[in-house]
Image (tube, rainbow, N blue to C red; front, side):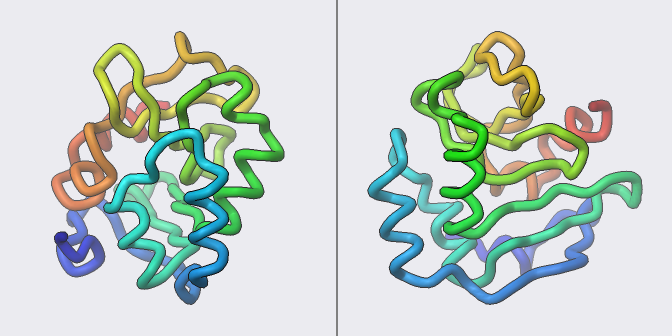
Length: 144
């Protein structure tokens, strides 16, 4: 698996990061998730967590660690409104980044926390790696 931080696209600048999620939190996340948690996400939070990235110096996105992921999914009842999904981050502007299956198939989507509806999700990319390494879908985030 590719080391995302070593191959981070120039569009993103890592501005904050915390220590990795512990094994207990990761096990809890896996057990509570309605979807199979993608390996790319697990590998990322095993090394570090609570990532904050500047996007083209215009906005920010955060990728939560395991505990933050569990907390935010429960607090916003993500799976009640978008079954078979897992919110993994946000844009610090009221939108959640989620793994889900939408009109473009399974991948990373963005949706407003105040309008959690599968029909309102916007496709970002087929994976977190495609977004952070290849920059695929970054225009969707910039144009929110």
